[in-house]
Length: 414
Picture 1 (cartoon, rainbow, N blue to C red):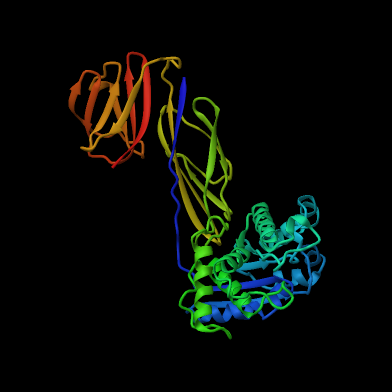
Picture 2: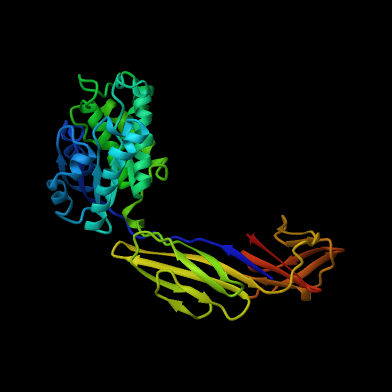
């Protein structure tokens, strides 16, 4: 007895967003040169809009913010599109165990509070940069490159732990330092940003949150046009070519429907596991006329066949649909059979079945992705090789039922 599974995922994308509300929670790396205002002015110059606010205290760690009630007052003040979280400049680069105990739990706690306030808020971690000469206290971070890499890896790990995104400012800084060494980004202390550093960071935030390029902005703060344009291009390159690497999601595609399943009682009973994000309501269609609104339903099919399972997840954040297919076959199959066969589409667009056993047309059944039988015509037979013409394209399920044996393959036909 065999149960075969095939899968196809489909996602939906909704609308365009040109206005965002952003709360910055951090310390002096945010308030130096007033990063939120530079970000807002940059956004306005590009035809978009940003409502910004901030909660910043000099030297504050994630733990300091967790212990400050004013931080949570800011978080709960409104339904933010984004809440940016930044730790003290060194703390994510400290030894792994120290980060696990003194940084990660508090960074995640803040993220959980953001999402508890408003389901559709996205948490975005501000990946800062290494100090100009690193931190001489620790051999592992005693250069800019060493410290910058530790910060990069730590912020990505923190984002993964809280299912959040990252604005890779530190990566943009490294690109400028490596490729445009005449542009200085540091203030005199070798840690905080000068105006060029803040401007580059604002450009990186614009690309990260709006998913748009800052190139073309005529807002340059006090920088000359050439320098501003270089920094705009760097931010665009670092962010927009690597959105998935930075875990960045556009507000229009927050809801992601996904699920897995197991054949809990073969061959007909299946347990479905919902893995959707930002969803609160669910609609399942199991392909046999039965539906469910449970989060993790169990379903029993009454007969063999190919069934399309649709899951629609939705909430105030939007909606998304995903589709998978289950093929149930209960024919007896010799699992140890040495019979060889192959199915492919040739250059002429014909479906070719090549096997070492004789196949007749009556032995062949072709289903489309909806589980419907497809008509076809056998154009040529050469021994065990058969060429088939079908007007159906897309995902096809080729079934061979012959002499108490059953074979199944899935192909994509153009």
